Structure formats: C-alpha cells, structure tokens
Length: 291
Image (cartoon, rainbow, N blue to C red; front, side, top):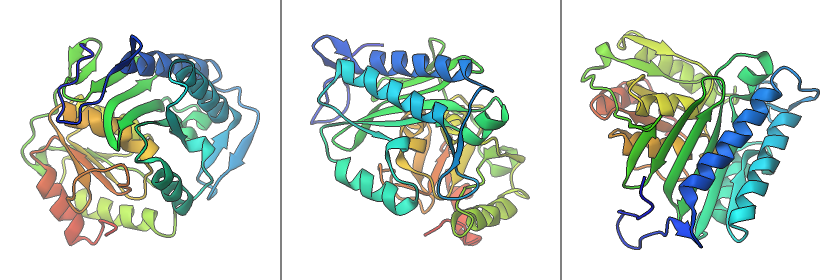
C-alpha cells in the first residue's frame, strides 16, 4: 500500500523520517502475536480486574510492554493508550481517553483482545493496534496469531487481508445475516442490555455468534464473514482498529443509536451497511442500545 494519505484536510503524514506508520503497526502486531501464541498455555498468574469475568495475565502485560517499546523505538514522541495501562472500569477508561484523544498521534492498543479465550486455550483472540491522528483513526491492524491472519487498513486506502482487498458482505436483510455480539464483563449494565439485544436479534437474523474478541469480530465484518456486530460497554482499544477495517472495507460503523463513530464510542454497531438500519432499529425497539 502507498503511504500517501488521501483523507480530507488536515492530512496526516503516514511516514516520519521514512518510517511508515502502517509498517510499524503491522510489524509490532505480528511480533506481539507471535509471542503471545508462544506463551499460550503457560501463563502463571491470573488476576481479576473489574469483575470475575474481566481477566488479565502476565502475558497481557508483557505483550503491551513489547508493543509500547516497539512503537516508542520508532516514534518516541507519540502517545500510547493501552488497556493494561489504565485502571479497571468504564470511568477510568473514559478518563484516560479524554486526556489523550486530542493528541496529534495516539496509538490505541489492546495487547490481547479476548483474554478469557486465551486463558482457556480457545483460539479466538487477537492483537489490536490503531493509530489516531487528532482523534481520527488512520491506521488499523488486527492480528489473529492462531489463524495467522493479519487484517490491515489505512485511511482512504482500503482494508486488506493477505494482500487482497477486503469487501463487506452483500446481505440486504437481517434474515439473511450472520451477526456477532459479545457477553460483556459488566454484569450490572452492559451484559443485561446485550442479552436483551440477543433476544431481539436472534429470531430475526439467520444466526448469532459470540466468539469473544470484539476486534476479531469487527475484522470478520470487514472480511465479509459476518454481516454485522454490536456490543454494549466496549472501550476504545477494543474497537478503534476494527472501526477502520470495517469502514475501509465498505461497511458502516456507528454507535448503537446510529450516531457517527468516534474514539469515545462504547456501544458499537458495525455492519456491511445494508443491514445497519434494520439491526439498529431492532436493538432500539428492544431497549438494548445503552442510550
């Protein structure tokens, strides 16, 4: 892919001193992914974060340290927002993002998206790395180390998998669609809402999948493997890279109320575009948008 931006003014620079942001993101995600795959099944410490369903291991922390070091080697003055560097809970996540979101270059990192899967050896987890320029995502990379699949998007240049341009699926109706969601760790607010959504969407969709990595679910929407994905109560590091993958593959990303995607969105809806309004309406009528 070319490093010349095609986005609207002010245009971000995709290289600094000859170093490509996209190349650094790809290399960093691949190295972190290889390392966490090597460590699969060997983690020694399992810690609970905000709830018994919200897990972290020393591998999550080691992966984030590796990612931070690799990015800082190339771009020492850039800001990095990583999941393991933020205290647990929605308020802490929102506060951390608020203090950083307007920085010129902000890397948004999830060192293992799908830690519960990782802990249990269920092979559906990923490394998610995004780069935002003044609040707009311009690079998104999601790497699945078990499937050795690297999903890459650059603002205005499309989304790619194994060198081929990705395109969202063509389903026009929810009844023909395979939709994904998640079971959030927040059992007081997000989980009940998502379960209401499942109850409303399941009879209308062809089927629903819940595999446990929001970043990979969004990558699958971009690749045309899923018609759509929604989830309540996510964080910027869960969805920033995936948001660009979907939009650059021709899909649509909003919050669950239909408002445009920003880094602050926590209740996300990502689809092929043609089933977006039907899925949003279904969630709204069920009172399952989180709004």
